[in-house]
Image 1 (tube, rainbow, N blue to C red):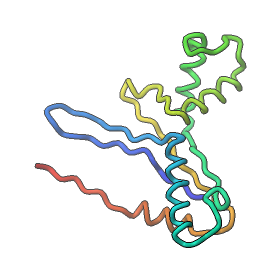
Image 2: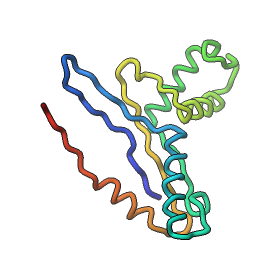
Image 3: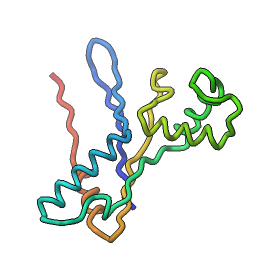
Amino acid sequence: MTTFKVHSEVGLITNSSTVIYTNATGNTVDRAKELINSILRLSDSDKTADDLYDFALEWNDLMIERAFDRLKEDPIGYGLDENMSDEEIEKISIERLNNGWRPGVEEGRPCTQNLVITDKEGRIVRDFAAFLNSIEKEVVYD
């Protein structure tokens, strides 16, 4: 299993301080699959990303708890039945996170999630992750 740490926090220095949060969603999984499928097609492989890997978003416990608390505090306001079990609310919390819901971001709290790719056949995903994580960042000030 290889974990790509997707979240990053970047401070911009302008006339005011601004923070940009980069978040993974279900779209991140789709883009990862498209990239791998492109590489496989270029290699004349008859395999697809889904043949070789399992893809998932992995949320940290704090983010799941934040989403759960929001839904539990006001289930009707979030379109839920107020008699739902905690297990059902947690499942819905994760589904909504995966679809782009970011409770707490409006209060300046970052989200933390990772793209997890599990290699089904012992392929090169670990080397690919090492390559992507080796790219250096640079800040330029005018």
